[in-house]
Length: 304
Image 1 (cartoon, rainbow, N blue to C red):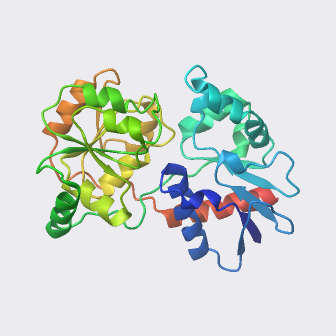
Image 2: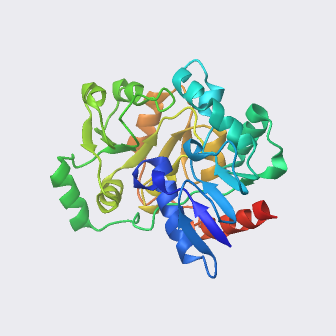
């Protein structure tokens, strides 16, 4: 099989970019006799995979597979007006795809309800922690703490801080009462520097991210809507307890590996984080190599 893979998002260290880069690396490792061509303009390949909705083709000339990470802009139209308009034609392209990959059964159900896609055309393929994300030793933790001015004990939140995202509830988390300092990890824009009483690290590489996870009391995850919640499995891979809003999708991903708090109780979320103790339960056993093997099967289905 000759696969066309749109690798454009892989340079972005955030969620979709991490998905694209980790999956592409794993696809290469599991390719066998298959060939991978990095392009968003497929011509002579057998299957085209767009790992993000921005790359979905409205009139593909070959079987198309699209990864749909969530449907938040459709589910919360009043909060994501611009995204909804921008994605309108892309959603039409997704509806025409031979197969649609989603990270959870919860997103699969959203795709059925919001886009009317037949369930048999949707395949659930979970995400996984990047290989570099594993528990680090005391020296690495101390170096990361010194480099970023982190306190001795802290709670951590990980994600993008370029624009305020209503479902992430970072501003509300920063304002909620807490016992331990709060560290926010991720690339920032000026609005994030106005958040009260938090430590911002900015973008960090995976080795530093692993050390910051490893030094934290817990990851706090206040989102009230998610497609998967990748930082939660990353934290577990680093031995860090996870305290999260009680969402069906997070229960699906984490099972009994996290402490769940009512989604409207951010003070309770932070208190549970302060009470957490390491080590955390082991993360789900699923890896990016498992995801790649499952994705090759999706390509074979799409090709027919």
